[in-house]
Amino acid sequence: MKQNKLLRAARLTMLVATAAASMAGAQLANAADLPNKTLIYCSEGSPAGFDPAQYTTGVDFTANTFTVYNRLVEFERGGTKVEPGLAEKWDVSPDGKTYTFHLRHGVKFHTTSWFKPTREFNADDVVFTFQRMLDPNQPFRKAYPVQFPYFTDMGLDKLIEKVEKVDPYTVRFTLKEVNAPFIQNLAMEYASILSAEYADSLMKEGKAADINQKPVGTGPFIFRSYTKDATIRYDGNPDYWKPNTVKLSKLIFSITPDPGVRVQKLKRDECQVMSYPRPADIAPLKADSNIDMPSQPGFNLGYLAYNVSHKPVDKLEVREALDMAINKKAIIDSVYQGAGQAATNPMPPTQWSYDKSLKMPAYDPEKAKALLSKAGFPNGFDITLWAMPVQRAYNPNGRLMAEMIQADWAKIGVKAKIVTYEWGEYIKRAHAGEDDTMLIGWTGDNGDPDNWLGTLLGCDAVNGNNFSKWCYKPFDELVQKGRETTGQEARTKFYTQAQQIFAQQLPFSPIAHSTVYQPVSKKVVDMRIEPLGYARFDGVTMK
Picture 1: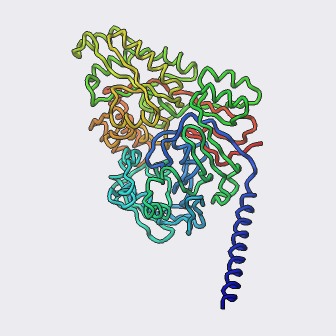
Picture 2: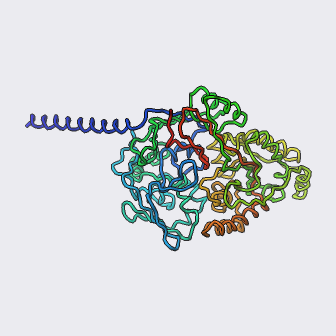
Picture 3: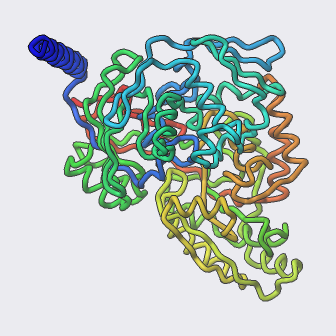
């Protein structure tokens, strides 16, 4: 009897060992399909986390959204056109309020040291992802309560009536009203699909917050480790559902906040792609025989937000005076160094519906002083001016821009104290409305005007990306009409009127649109400039 047990145990051990060996062999065979190539990306900042629905910055999106995750629909590489993602196709009801998504079969979630999926992607994952954002009482949200700024900024919490599983591979979204940019909005970062099975396992372990530190997705790269302020490591996903897309076995982010150091690392081949060169570095990089410097007009806007919930910038005359006192041409010459153009609108000229007729008041310190006197501040006042601690495409040097504005305002008696924080803290405190004025900006997310006017200036976005805290009903109603109307021409009429109200009320001062440069080693093949402001490494390889 004992011998039989021992024999059975020995056979079982052999079977387990054989199974493990064949699994390892299968994994190796899969992994062998990926070219043995490593790419190092010199990024400009540390991500605040790896849960895309919580965040709104390019640093976070590059580190998680387009590496680890997918969405139902996706933006094409290097463009703003939407193509199928985890949904192979979708239907829209005749009344425009019901969207039915037919999901892709055979998509695998990542296997990591902290989670091994027992099933493939299905409708449960889509329902979980959206219910978490829609329902404050959803169990996972209660276990890990966070904000979803994008989702609420665009009013999707009010727009989506329900998300239902029709069958394991079909999901139906019912909207309360027609929403023209809905499909474009679903291609955005916040809509990255999470694993419901992984979320359940985290809940059982009492570790719901780990979803933000140990991500699991279906994307082209598998997250392996993050050393804060130093490195993020990923492996290419050998099981990626889009064949021949992953062409790197390893992807490493080398977090390098200093742009001068990023340039040196690129020149020494310590990284092969870098983010955001300083304008002063563009000519030397172009002259380097080992480096390519593609560029294109930026789909972006750098601006100065006035927190209208704070006095005295709640007064229109004060905002007009502060705007008129800024020598924007000098800023464009010094900060952008020829790689920027003056901004007059709350969106870039490449966005359809852009109102070419808008003109911002000219630089006029004397007139600015007179406006301040009229507003009751003949001797000026004290104010805080927040300066971004990181480079963005829309602002290559936040500190220098802040110092130039500080000097301009001093000429009209306004004493600005420059304040800055680490990037994640900067955004968090700005959401909370701690600033009086702040430098910030935007790179378009989805190619739709609503992504500028609604996301940056709408009433729904006051606790999110509307850093001006400006809620103005006549403006907001036009934005809502633009969302609910179909057809580009009809929508443009509403958006043109909204831009004119913006110019009259001036909740923020547009400064510049900048040209985007993407320095890459000549070893890198098919790295594209993303007009929506992040970096993507699917489809990229090395010579």
